[in-house]
Image (tube, rainbow, N blue to C red; front, side, top):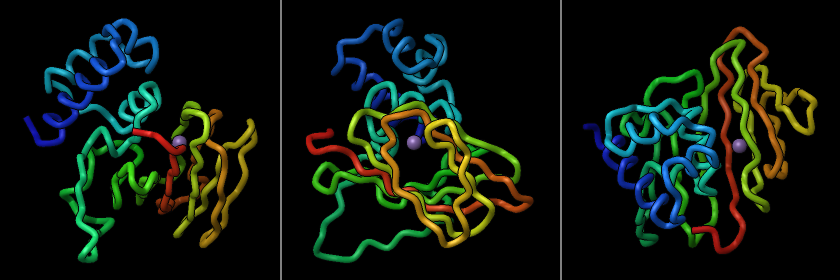
Length: 189
Ligand code: MN
């Protein structure tokens, strides 16, 4: 079992206990099959990024909270690399590197993401109060907001309330690289 699957197995079981949800209920809330949830809890599956997002959203958890339990001291700077293989997740259409995982004291998580040419990633609504800040480094990115795809130019940025369905699309022939800073409402665990 890899470190990520081990951590994921514990975290998912913990989240489900915390909520008092059966596997049936967890499946309904996340849109992920009971069989898949069971496999993840037994550490038998390396779920895709899309599946992990569904689980995080269904449980009102941060995405990075599923993967890590960071405790970074503040008395020294923390350096991270977007290409750090340690931080990379299993290969999927969307590549996600948690640069700064969620910490309750800060209330946000920051990712570097890479979306392959002509692919898209759709997201269900996050809990009320979640705000995303998307900053495009390079590539032809479009964002789905209120049912409409809107272009975000290179070096452009957009902030939006993420308590509604949204999506990210690469309309070009090279990877879109972007940052996403997701801010959670006060009191988010
Ligand atoms: Mn999202």
